[in-house]
Length: 343
Image (cartoon, rainbow, N blue to C red; front, side, top):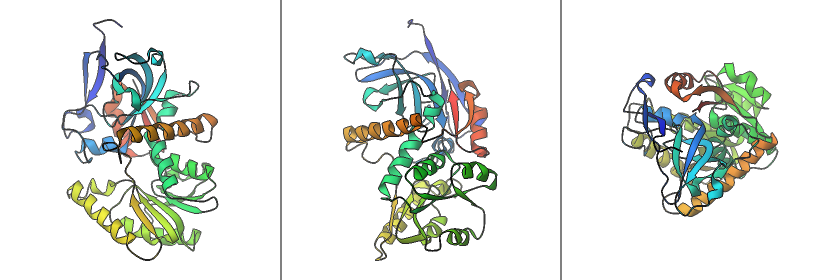
């Protein structure tokens, strides 16, 4: 690698429209001890980056910064003292920011090997989305034959979640716009229109005794309906706060109200459980354990992808230089799955 090598990265300068994203060139960074330089082959556009564009994602960095929640790529160099055999290895990592670039510095203990036969874009669809879906299903303590309701079943997390649910022998009801219903049926989902004013009644028609778990990425007022659809002993898992984006209220305040409601429900003597899934729980206080668990769970999900248990749902592929167009397309949610950038 020559000393004058350059990288390209996407910079979010502030609260801007998608065409306000900036492409910057800078010198190739050199990995420090404990780091690897990864040449990015695929990175994704998730709802997190869409929230960050509005300055509505909890804990996001100060502007300007490089977005990019996760990535798949090949190790090109490692820092002093690291195992040189890592060079040339395809890996995946959850970065939270920094993935929208041709190259990224990543902590070595955050890297998970990716099976060589997997397409990088396919693998990208299950990095943060697959781990999220896998960990939430495990936390819900479900058994084969039970029924779950997945809101946003056409989304990046939703499309992986419904496939893992079917793999585990669960009956899956999924909400999405009507245009996604054919694709969801092909995944074994019983689809319902999320805009149906009688949605709760439609769920009750399919599952008269309620559902054993609800997975809700929206939060907001609708979470009360989700909780009311639980069967005895059922579990509500909220894993997003999308309702806060256009609420006009402080994201932190909306989140506090949501957590307070979940806490209150857990105090009720009805046997239901309600909780908020936090992907990053423990990453500051138990970093080593957090990263071990992440590598283990991501390895499991990547292997299920390799086996064909999970079929990658790629909404579209764009080169990094067309990131503004890609972001506009992602925000339309017109196609199920994940929009992938290929630097």
